[in-house]
Length: 275
Image (cartoon, rainbow, N blue to C red; front, top):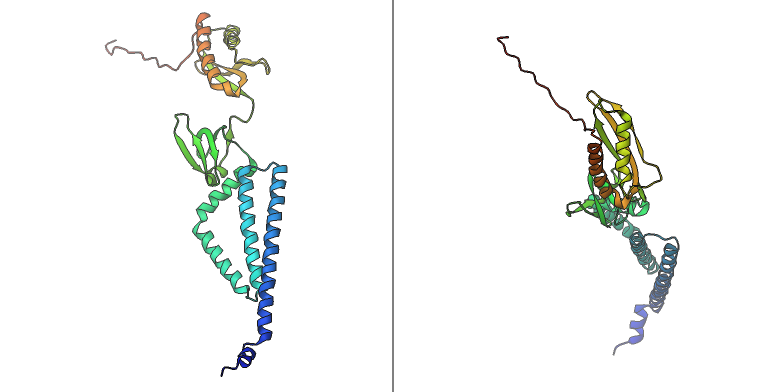
């Protein structure tokens, strides 16, 4: 006949109670940790919205924080169950090091993306020049790549690590922009006549702003000509159309005054050897 009492004693009621207690304690810790994670993420989301953190940065930080909190929860529950976490931490460290070495380039792009999103050197719709002279309109900013539309409508995906390590020129961040045009005129034309013709060309352009006032003056004296500088301010959105129209009008205005532009030329004299 089976002696159940002896079997029960062999199992050890005390050990069984301890195991049940540990499991219940681990469940309580798990539930409390999950509740704490949810509350913390809600607080983080509200704080990020109040601080007007960029949506991409907010999403990334929320994901990273969530993963870290879940890892801490896992280690805490394991410790409650009596599982040694020292070896787990060592394994996590080795895995993390291996992943970081294998994904070094990707992490560099990610770091560049975070830097761009945090510092805001440009935004979608801005015309920029960066990463080895690439210039175009920013379409979108991702964590690894920035999508740029070139003037000829080509799309280029530029690694954020390249942009973050280069000088960035943003042509759209300011409302107004100054255009500079250099004009070379021969010495035979009086300076005042040339300046009057250049001012007349500026006055025909509706895109030129009155303030700051347009500037026309002698820039330098060269071998065969005088170089004049024309500086005028316009809206950033109208910069190129205004520049093109002003270039045409400068030629028309100079021609109307009988003033010719100077250009490099070479005079060749041929001499007969018999002479």
